[in-house]
Length: 437
Image (cartoon, rainbow, N blue to C red; front, side, top):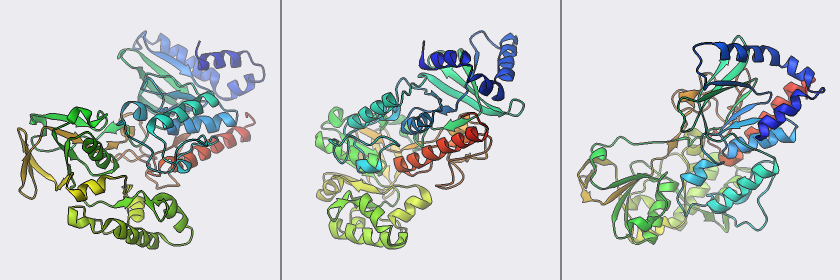
């Protein structure tokens, strides 16, 4: 018996819990589920389950953070996770050399700090170990292999209906019903595939960074990395370390900053400066120090945006590149920079500056996107365009009728912690006002 079923069984026979069940519309919901089961149009493989606590979609850091904050307040929740593990993006879709880009104190989840012996920038293995200990500490047991295919608010029941499909069993679905729905699927739920003329006909290997692990398989090969964010830059460095010949496409402008400035992390320095100066002044300071340390990056094909790195992050969500050694390889010529791609013919890639080169492989470091619009039938809290909250941080965490969002405000794990605490507090306040907590 799983954790949720055991909890439900205990609550059914708990006299203290009985008033809360009846006041929470348990009886009408059970009647709905029974009638649904009798409906001839419903297949035998479909089931309907009432959830007395919030339903959380996604068992990444955001989902775990909300569940922990709720658990601390005595509120159980149900996490539905499409993969077979927590933090599936970190465990299954990241390259081997990945570490946290920010110091650990800025990446802690609520209620549990990192172990004191962890390095400043923990590796992905250490971060995953931290998340597993986090889940164990708060007794978080997600329902794995449950891919949510539809979630909508039922105006008659005044509850959220969430339909999940069991991974590998297309015809088997389960419907969960609750007062609250927390969207925690993250900004990186689905890969972004670029539209490049001739890419599908490329004669070599094409791989997205979600499937890239190490440069060992590319030793001695000419590899074109498309995308100049943190992932693209680190993949290029990894390819260099494994004796490949990396080239990188820089189609847009990009801010490159040293990961550390003036003896401390660039991010920590930025946070400290923002206590005293406005954003545009802090941006000027960061760019002045970066130019002193790196020189004029535009001379190497890395033109900077006209807007400063922090202001750009606030306006568009685009994160500056925190350099961990890639720039030195670009400056030495070990990594060559190219502008956008015009077209691909066979193994030959023609660039916008009329240069043409042959490559053995292409690595797409083109990022990810939210998948919320594909399954959530609500257009008030989330935008159809990018699947992110319409309101900017810190106002994008709460919608109407018990709908919440966590970790989707382009503020990293710090933003996740803020969202998670607010959601737990809000639900606690609702239950407290109703005398049900």
